[in-house]
Image (tube, rainbow, N blue to C red):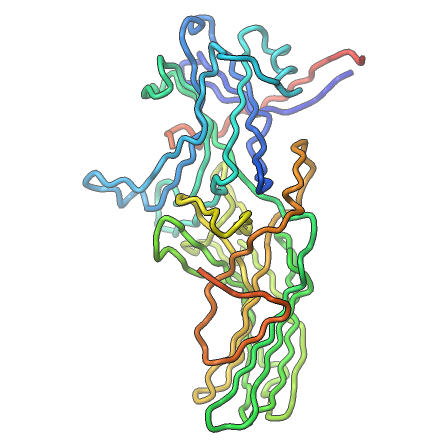
Length: 406
């Protein structure tokens, strides 16, 4: 029986260490993260030396070009570290490691690293057109090096590192349908203006249109002149106290059905499509982590087991739909917000975990401070708030292993 599988290969500059990984995307299931399994091939000349492995989370929070006078805007966190060779103890190996061991010979040694559940997700902040250097964000890489102790400073010639990503997929079950009702009364004027906004579901996938149901009931003596709907991306850089900001990634402004005179109403559906293609070269837009300098997509919503489970070196991403009614210079505005989830659909995985069906914490951007009375139905509350060779592209090698059927 023939098994075809692909692995990622990376070799040290001196050719003495070669690392193989079966994949570079590792899924966070909220309660646990897929283990990082791989093998390393050691040259005969290094058989008398020790090889150590580490998983490094690199958090860059400032531009490289601004690093002057000894300033450094990058923090490296060592999330896992252990001796790979000589192996301190035997552990269970995966099928991929067993097949690679048979294929690569006796100088092949397996390794396994486990990331903590609270580790931040891979997120990249889009740089501007004139920005150079490594972009800001959270990046991961696996590093193998030769030394006497795991705390030794690694030498570039005998070090091999490969970039990886920690990602999340959309939960398998839909939550409650988001819906909110916002009412505004006016001083010295009778009646009130009511705005009801709802979405057809809670979880959306990248590239999917978002249907926003808008219902306006004008029981006041004001006139609604136009309305605007937008999708806002909220980014929270946890390291900074004032590191929260929002960016509009999709919007539409219309006067269809307007003006809405006193005593009349309007009901319509507005479709929004947040895409990276319409937000090119906008500095600060959060993107999914990049393995190579290729186009990716807007960052997925960050799911947390609890609101307090925030890593200090992480970036929290959230999305919300915001609808605004414009009443003119004297009437002011009326706005309503609804948080939702924007993620990739879940794919098959060998890592069995029921965390995708557990409740998660959904963080939404900070609401606007408007003079209005708001009731939410159901209860939704809008609360706000590397080494030099790590980015190089590893070789993609294809193996065919023959094993006998038992």
